[in-house]
Amino acid sequence: MSLLEQMQGVDLLLRRPGALDDLLARLPEQERGVFEGVDRARLSAVNASFVTLLVARWWQARFPATLATLAHALGGRLGAARALVASRAFEGAVGEDLTGSAIVGAVLDADEALPLWLPDLVAYEYLLSTGLPRRARGEPIDAALEARALEEPSWLSGGRLTREVLVASFAWPVGALQEEPHDAEPCPETHLLAIVGDEELVDAEAPDVAVDALSLLAEGADDAVLRAALGEEADAALDWLRELGLLA
Image: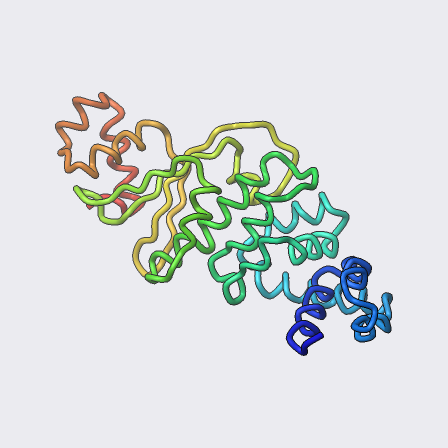
């Protein structure tokens, strides 16, 4: 066994201690010595410390509600951390999962019985903490991940809009779930999200009329056109969008 193969084996065991038996079974007898002497109790303890610190450093600040939900569903913070670090998605992490691909991918790929609303919640937290801020800074995002996580997102810009705006629809009440994860029923929400000013994040649950107004404004429609299309609700929608800093 080469040094590289030994290091790869150690990395695997740090993330998945339960893989030790499979690793030994795959190795020729003369190459098992490196791993036959592994103290399983110590390996489990090292793994616990490793995954706990990693999750706290990489994801806690960006995905708090997702991690709280995983901890509840998987028997505590350690169970959640172990599941995330052992996931296949983790292997594709960029740096400290700068693009969010590992944690979002792990949730979307999970085999465990997780709350039905968790994919929506992790997608929402991804947008707030990672997707939109990285766009605003001109940093790369994972387009394939967004396509998996978000259902028909609509990016609007130009016309009379002052900023690019994302219209994102969710089947669950992600705003309330992000504040405090709890048992929930499906309750569709549409959010307007944008970065304004000095990387200030706008996140507002939007009524249908505001979404319709945004689409027309992105095409350059003037107030008279909006009033003709949206009726008496047009002026309230325009005032609301101005307050959000999305309309000049």
